[in-house]
Image 1 (cartoon, rainbow, N blue to C red):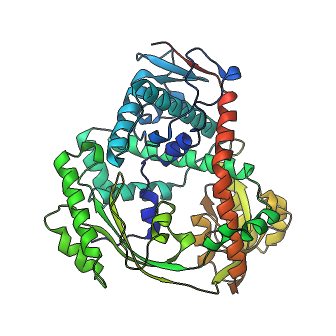
Image 2: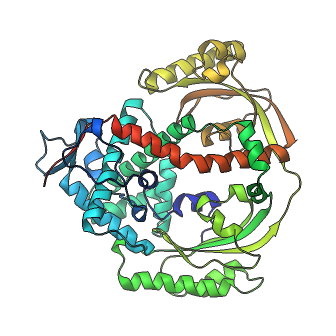
Image 3: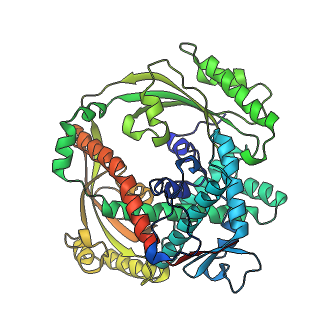
Amino acid sequence: MTVLSFHSFGKVAKLTLSLSLAMTIASSVNAAEPVNSTSTSSANKPYSVNPDTKLAIAEARASSTLTGQNQRLSPANSTDGIIALVNDNAILKSDLINAIAQTQRRAAAAGESLPAGPQLQNDVLNALILRELQLSLINRVGIKPDSDAVNARLAQIAQAQGLDSLTALQQRLDSEQPGSYAKLRAQIIEDAAIQALQQRQIASRVRITDQDVDAFLASPEASRLNQSEYQTIHVRVPYMDDYSRLTPQQRQAALDVANALYQTLKTSNIDVNAAMLQVQGDYPIPLQGGDMGYHKAAALPTELSSVITSLNVGDVSQPIVTPEGIDIVKLANKRSSDNLIIPQWHTRHILIKVDEQQSDELAEQKINDLYEQLRRGADFAQLASTYSDDLGSAGRGGDLDWVEEGMMVAPFEATMKATTKGNYSAPFKTQFGWHILQVLDQRQQDVSEEYRRKLARDALYQRLAPQAKEDWLQELRASAYVKVLED
C-alpha cells in the first residue's frame, strides 16, 4: 500500500482535474448574461458560467495548444468550423464539442446535475473564452510553472492508475493513443500557469489592513481559529482507469470497496493497515493512504478541511467521490495547543527575474556572475542592493527578515533549510527567476499570536478573493476582442 502525504491528497482531492479552469468558472457565476453572437469587447461583460459546471475541461484545448502560441489555430489555417474569435486566436467547434463532453463526464463522476443543452453550451463556451484570454496573457507575461510541480501532478495521476513511474504512464497513454502523454503534460502546464496567473492577480487586488484583522479577531468568527491538531486516517480507493473510461461495473466495484472501508473504519482503535488489507480483496488497484498523523487545521487540505473539522473523534466521513478515486477520512484524535513554537530562518536573497524583458538564459548568466563575485569575497548586501530585481527587499540588502515554513515557494524553502547559518546557497531557480540566498540566523519562536493573526488574515483573504477574481476576469474580458460566430 502507498502512504501519501496530505500535500499530495490536497492536490488531487478536487472535483475537477483542471483546477485553473474550475477557478475560472467559479469566479464567473454571478454574471448571468447569455452569449451575444455578434458582440465585441467594448460592449460586453464577462460571460457567466453556472456553478453546477465547476468541472474540468482537461483535454479540451490540449491538442490545439500543445505546440505553443505560434501553432494555435486561426481562421486562416483552420479546416474546422470556428465558433468564436478571441483576440488573435480562434475557438473551434470541435473544441466546444470536446469540452462539453468532458464536462458531462466530470459531472457524472461527481453525481452533479448540469443545465439544459443551450445553457450548458453557453457556459462551456464562456469558460473556453476566459481560458483563452488567460493563456494569451500568460504568453505575454512569460509565466512558466515549476517543472517539479508538473511532474508531481503527473506522478499523482500515474499512482491513481496503479502505475509506479511517469514512464509507465507515458507508455500506457501513448499505447492507447499516440501523443496522449504529451497532450496531458501540456494541459497540466497550462493549468498550473493559469493558477499562478490568478494568484498574482488576486494578491495584487486584495488589501487587508491590521484594523481588518483586529475586527475579525473580535468577532464570533474568530472562535474557529483554534490551534487544534487533527490526527486523521485518510484512505483512497483509486479507480482502475481514467473515470471517463470506466465501465459501470468498475465504478460500482470501487464504490463497494469504499463502502466496505467506511464500515470497517468505524470500528474503534482500528489498525488502518489491517483495515485496508481486509477490504482490498480482489480489487486490482492497491488502496492508498493510511494514518496521516497530526496536522493543524490551517495545514489540512482545503478540500477536506471542512469535512475533517466537522467530525467528532472516532467519526468517519461518507465516501467522497473525486475524479481520481473515492476518499474516506476518519478523525482518529484531536488535541489542542496553547503555544505554537516554530523554526524560523533570518534570510536574505538576490533575485534575477525571468520575464518578457529578460530570458531565462540571460538571468542564469547574471546570477552565476553574482555567485562568482560572492565566492571572491563580495558583500552580499551590496550585491543585493545593486542587482536584485526584488524591489521590496533590494533596498534592505536583500533582507527578508524572519522566514518560516510555508511562506516561500517550495524550491526557496528547501534551499533555505539546506543552507547552514552564515552561509549562502548556490544559484537556484523558482517560478520567479534565479536566486541566491543567505541564512543569517536561525531560531525557535513562539508565534501563537502571530499565527492567530495569520489565520484571520487568511480567512479574510478567502472571503475577498472570489470577488477580486471576478472583477479581474471582468476587466480581462472587457478589454478583449471576442466575437461569437453563428453556427
